[in-house]
Amino acid sequence: TLKNAAVNAISPTIVETALGKKAWAGELGERAKLQIPAGRFAQPEEIAGLALYLLSDAASMITGENVVIDGGYSIQ
Image (cartoon, rainbow, N blue to C red):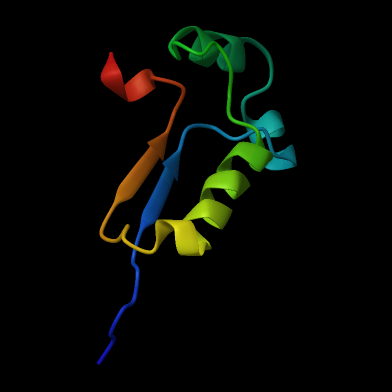
């Protein structure tokens, strides 16, 4: 059995990795950014920062969560 196991998910918007930049280049990406209140895609460091926090002792009471990082897109 798993005791004290934290199970969380991170659901990011488009992330500006090499693949993300290639897939969302040009007009398609610019139109997508207009739909995001923050006006941009996520940076890998922003996603990594949340992952590190969720792995830290500071997040020991967080489990069963899906954390959305989408620059406000989902609250529209």
